Amino acid sequence: MRPLAFRMDPERVHEMAMGMLRRGLIRAKPFADSRLEQDLFGVHFPNPLGLAAGFDKNAVALEQWHRLGFGFVECGTITYHAQPGNPRPRMFRVPEAQGLINRLGFNNEGAEALATRLGAARPSIPVGINLGKSKVTPLEDAAKDYQASFRLLHRFGAYFVVNVSSPNTPGLRSLQERSALTEILASLREVDATRPMFVKVAPDLELSALDEVLEVAVEAGLTGLIATNTTISRDMIARDPGETGGLSGAPVRAKSNLVLAHLARNAPKEMTLIGVGGILTAEDLYEKIRLGAHLCQLYTGWIYGGPQMIPSVLEQLVTLMDREGVKRLGEVRGSLL
Image (cartoon, rainbow, N blue to C red; front, top):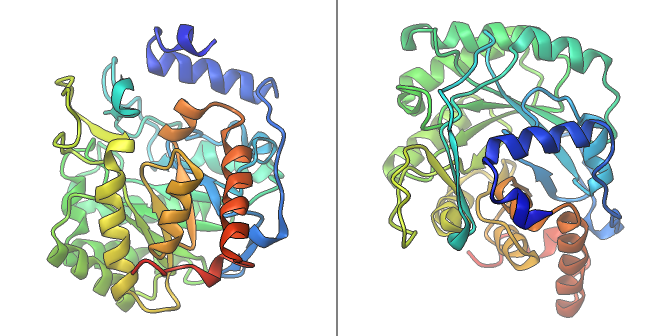
C-alpha cells in the first residue's frame, strides 16, 4: 500500500487516511508501560509521544488516536475564521531524506466549528489546541484574533499552543518578537489565566531571539515551549525540490534539537518542554528526552513509519530504558546537556 500511496499527491493521501481513521479502519496494537506515564501541569499522559498539530487539524478523529498508541494529540492549527489555506499543490515529499515540505497555510474549519466538535467529543487521551492567526486579520490585530479563538475554545483543551512560528502565513513569524508576543499572551490571559499555555518556536531563530521568546514566556507565566516548528532552510537536504514552505521530518532534527537543548539549559525547571522535529525511531525520541524534553511529538515520522510505528517506538524506548537501568523518564531527562 505504501509504495502506491507514495506515488499519489501527499495531501490526497492524507485526506484518504483521515477518512479511514474516522471509520476506525487504521489500527495498531497499542503498547502500554507504567514507566512511560507522567503527570505534567495537572494532566496525565499515558506516554510521552503525541501527534503534532497539522495532522488532525479539525479534530475529526479524536477517538482514534489512542488506539494507534499516541499519548496525546494536538489539533489545529486552528484560526478564528475558517480558511481554505494556500493553493494546491502544497505538500511535497522528500523521500530520500525522510522529509516533507508543506505550505498549507492554516487550512481549517475555524474555531467555532472546532468548539462544536470538541464539545461533543470524549477523547481518551489529552487534547491540545494549537492557535494561529487568520490570514485575513492584519498583523496589528493579531492579539484580538487569537483571543477570539481562545474565547470559543478555552474550555476544551488540556493545553493550548500559540503558533507564531509557521512560515506559511505572511508575517506570522514576526509575532515571535517581544512586543507582539507579549500582547498576544496578555490577551489570552484576559479570557482564562488558568489554562496551560505554550508557545511554539521556529528552528530558524537566532539564539538571542530565542532567549527573548523565553523571557516573554517566563514573564507571562507560560507552562512551557514547543521546539520546534518546520524550517525554511534547505541546507540539510542534498536535493532541493524547489518548493517553498516548511521542511519537516528527519532533516529538521538537528536544528530542532539545538533549540530544544538551548531552551532546556536556560528555562526554569518548572517549565515543560515539548520536543518536535525528526523523530523516526526510539533513539530519536530518547535523544530528545535526554536533551530536556518532557513530552515529544511527531507528524512526518508517522507518515514514513506507518500505523504500527508508535507502539513499536514506545516498546523500543522501554528496551533502551531497561538497558540503562532507567525506571522513569525523569531520571534521564536532560542528561545530555
